[in-house]
Length: 417
Image (cartoon, rainbow, N blue to C red):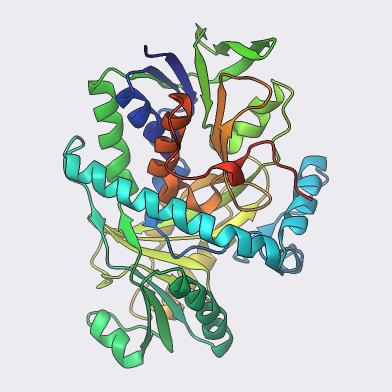
């Protein structure tokens, strides 16, 4: 018999969880504090990236963050502030950034990304959402320096050992791949295993489908409290209503930590702000790429080219730092000299907050405190890529089925030692 399930959060993870839960026969209601038209699920690079096997918490990242702390236009920016939770998270991040822990995480990240890639294809082939962009052209890691090349070559070798399709391209190869745009790079590592989509196309279609099949969608309804009795969550109170579900899925992205505190659960999580600029004129760019030295993601989407980037740890806010946006625009021109992002395009920049765990792995699984609470958050820069896989795993956990993969590494109560 199906359960009444409330999902807190209407991003890609929340919608995909609803998609798979309703297929299991559950009655699902999504609660979102906004109108599900903005945020990280709409402004991301749209990548489905089995190649992104190295977690953000990797050796040297904290040192880079400290080095860039007073440069607010740097790609990786940690705003100096007196914040106990941020200091604690930073210490956990440091403890997670070891070679041994990264090596353990690599095959796990690969497996969940491949699962998600297959599920994106299944959703498209089902025709339930209608047509949406899903292309497998791979991802170019464009580099200017030998240092960047050597760094990515090491990652590529690990990816190849894991069975992912990867190749090296020189300048002449780039001309063949991108004949209509000049690229100021020495070459690229081409992860042929990767795919890309248009988030602003997929999200509304998924939302429309969910409403059509009976999923309740409550927008502009913020969760203000979560009440538990004993080992069970009994009530979710919003700014407008009260719900008494059989089960709760916490998929609230960067807001998941504050909601967890209402249940006296400490969830180490920080918001990592990203920015994106859409260019609707023809750029000549047909291949998704990451501009390595500038740390910018480039995606040819349906009707426009998206330039996205930066990881900014400055708390939960939507403040747009102009210097960071200009850094993206300048970084694009340094790799694509013919592409000059205009002031009007810069003014239309969008921002979103990505929930980042200390070790780069999401929180996914049942709460040890409450038998009817499932966590589905903390995906950092892979939230889009891992949306369908997370939704599928949530549905399997909720229904008591064997999970499509081992989720023990995603334990929401894991210790960071």
